[in-house]
Image (cartoon, rainbow over all chains, first blue to last red):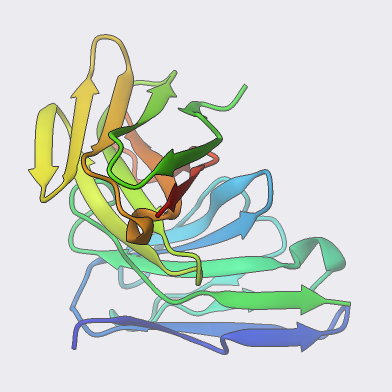
Length: 114
Length: 110
């Protein structure tokens, strides 16, 4: 089944404790992206990747890191999480660049930083 | 001001009604997407448009590039259409970032 998976789905952590949210797709898509969704602000792009070893900043990259060592995986790293990073996070992938084709979204990761 | 504006923010309809959700954007774009977010949180891509009109079942999406405006229509609405509908744009020049509207929460009552 074609899908984008994220882990964990729910996470409670404390300020400053490094964490990684994994994202994996099995569709051989070139483009992958991370978004966060906050009430009243909607979805905002954090980072995206056009292909292996090619990443770029979105709208709100501060406090986040990403890497794309393999085509299927695009982990989101919070080196020192802060309460303002409490949010719902989505990973997405699509063939080609953003907007050229429909994006497939992961189920979301709900993060609470205390 | 957000680059992508949606209206209305909230919409309540009776089953069977014709629904229209609007999206206006202020930047040049290469494509516009309509997304559906279910009450459980999952997001599904409904349409990608760069011109004209597309139809999938009871859903129709249109875009007017000159007016920088898109509409999503739902014919014969059903309670299972209740969801948040989100407009997203990919800007020009050919960059690869995506900008999103705040979403329209649709509730269809039986």
